[in-house]
Length: 403
Image (cartoon, rainbow, N blue to C red; front, side, top):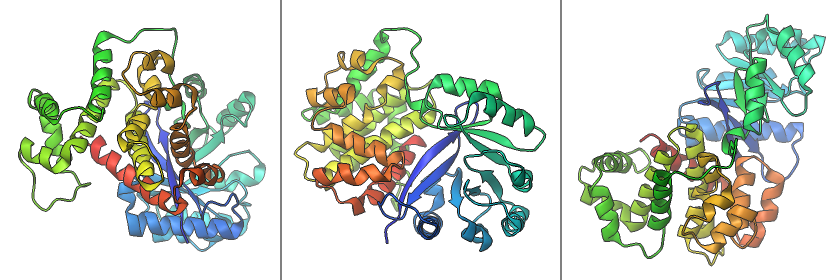
């Protein structure tokens, strides 16, 4: 039995990642009965904590994991470290005496408890008292009701988490209402107050990113770019010696690092360093997501029947959030860059032959399991390989993000 795991960031008020919610599905069927939920969560915990390593999956942050009634009564959370796990109680779990007693024991063991998709009813009072986090769907709940919840429950020692916050304006609104934590894709959308051009310095960085990902870019030029920048040289050595590569002997020379990574690896490294400079004033998760998408798209190209060079797919994923990074319309940015027409078409209009690869990556990261099979099949991509590709992309991106 395969388990499909994706992660969604949970931000604090400063747009720093505080935790990740782990989304899982026991296979790619669009169903999740009580039995399916039990198996999927059990498998997720087994993979995350025992097989794969929760530290790598969440970068050392806490993991929010959904628990069914049965798993709560069996005290399954107690099998895993309390400093790494937040016990998220699903909205359909009835707060009867057995559930409340189980949650009391879990709380006493040092676990944080979160109430998912919260809708107030008097019977929830015992669980509210035990909870550290209350999650409210920011789109499914009226603003007046949300304000009443925040005011009514303010006397409890809980933090309010706004789910499905999709725009920067919604993030600001939730912040003003008194929310402490935020979940959704607001961080990956451009925040455009007015149409603005890209500064010359940033445009130059963009062009470097585009140039180094060209298939015919020369290795000698890459060598020159590295040697003339002390910062890049330092980051290169940190990267080649990171946990992702698991080297027994530390690499201490630039030349050796270039040889070990190869031309493609060095080109990727330079484009990612440049991306970081472009997004220095943005949430770290925006860069991390761009890098995950780049690697994921590349692996999809290798694993399917694509006729496209994997460097094209890597570049597609890497530039997929450039509008949010620079707060500029995607079409304006694409018109200034020497990227292929296929990449531009996919990023601007979400059309063309490359578009399904990015669509598949976005569906996976959002946990839209019912869409994945439909997209993957025509690309000749094995659905069973997707969890492996995603985990590789997460670890690869975090090894880079630590630089």
